[in-house]
Image (cartoon, rainbow, N blue to C red; front, side):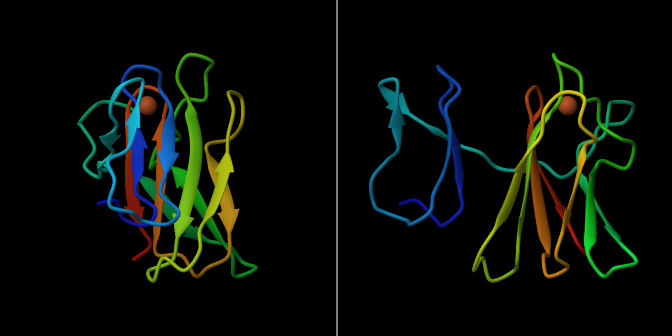
Length: 129
Ligand SMILES: [Fe+2]
């Protein structure tokens, strides 16, 4: 049974899918079950930072930065997307990033959670407290 907005990855081909409407079936890609991604939220000492950080802008919007020290945005190691979701999961906002971009997005200030996907270190989550 899947749940709304869960993300699943194929460990063979790298397909990454997000559930829009939940169902009872198992998600399969390349002939094997896909892996449910559980976002990490605890940084390791001394490595680059991944947990999304929320900053309030003067115009009332929020800036979501990856992370407390900006994450690298190199061809071989970068943030592929940032997605932010309100508490009731009624909608979501996702922006794709590419090497050379700043590791941040700006969004309306009704979001409580953001996730980001690093091409090497996977899925991470931060809260807007
Ligand atoms: Fe990373």
